[in-house]
Length: 131
Image (tube, rainbow, N blue to C red; front, side, top):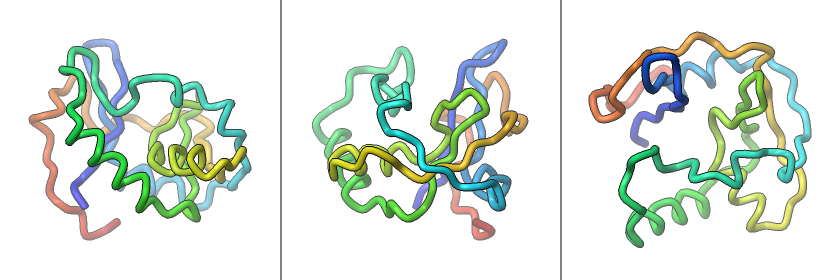
């Protein structure tokens, strides 16, 4: 699978967290059942960055495949403020399956981003064998 990043607006532009690192850092955090309806990100254009062109049907189908194949046994990763840092395809799967809760781990405080004020297209997208 292609390297993934979580993007969030920072002081000087977009900050990015390497999802492989978030997974490693979140190991050992307690898992909790979180109501899907409590996750504000489900009502946003989460997969598309501000300024992006509207998604094509092909791009949406790509996400549908990821939702279909998502493994709901892995907890989603939430930031200290409750935003989704990893796992939106699993959350979408939970919505499709009619589940009201999803397993999640939550950072008490967000880890430092891997990149600050970054251009998403300029980040490395090779596979990380340490995941």
